[in-house]
Length: 366
Image (cartoon, rainbow, N blue to C red; front, side):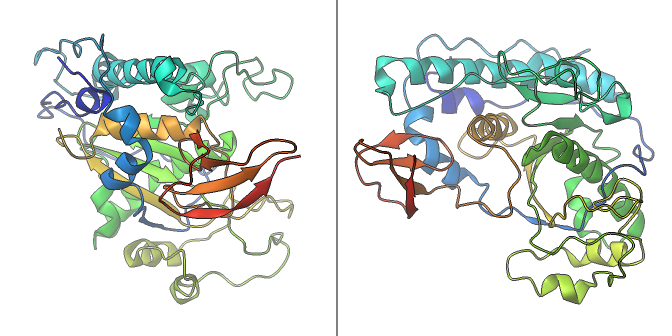
């Protein structure tokens, strides 16, 4: 039995059988926002995660249950997205949500000492936090918090549902692989872009900086960033971004394979960052992406550990910004008539002791 959250979240995933997994094209929708490109989210790695949460993950946690009992038949036979979702609900969602619940209890205990501020967060099915009554605009997965509901008056679903602060979507590995972004085959690149544009659109609609795509072979987490490029209406003549123009940016460089595939396509289809009426909305940069193999286990980044992490990040602040501080960094906070303290930008942990890692800047809270 696992004795720490790290042990629990890095247990091996079940072996799956994709012999009969469906093949073919992924769903496409002209209303999904097209991607500008993708590049590696370098910070999203095992070492950074441990530096942010090592005290939590390595703390002895009595009472962690056994991982769910999974049978090779029928649980692990993947024929379609429905059979994959059934496995993910029984295994992945159970493990991640259990770990998040124990994390909350640990942070609220005397051990937490008031340093770890943690609001409950859950990995849930997307139907609890639908963006719309249209199935094509509802993510398969959601990160939700108790009592945090949308405004029914402005909801596209026409009713009050939970706010989705980290959308996710299920795809079959026989139809989509994260490695296809590096392919020289245009057909693979075309199929790669469809689910990425889908989760990108879900993140934009939810104003959620992080989202993910989950298959029976991998988890791919993405982070969305707003662009600093000036907003222009469609009626304004503007040059199409070329590969060279995009690579001139020091911070956002997209893969050449994606750039090549996009160069022949319009960047202004319906539902993009520019409306047909010429009304500006927002620009977005290339997506950061990191893929974690389903087979990873023990002392390395695993699917369950990565899902726990992005839910932990989402509970702090998951809104889309034009830039983000390093994941493992602190900020000095000075509140009126209070002793200054240091706050971790990712975990939200507070301490009065000067941390060893980077301090970004001082913030005065009025």
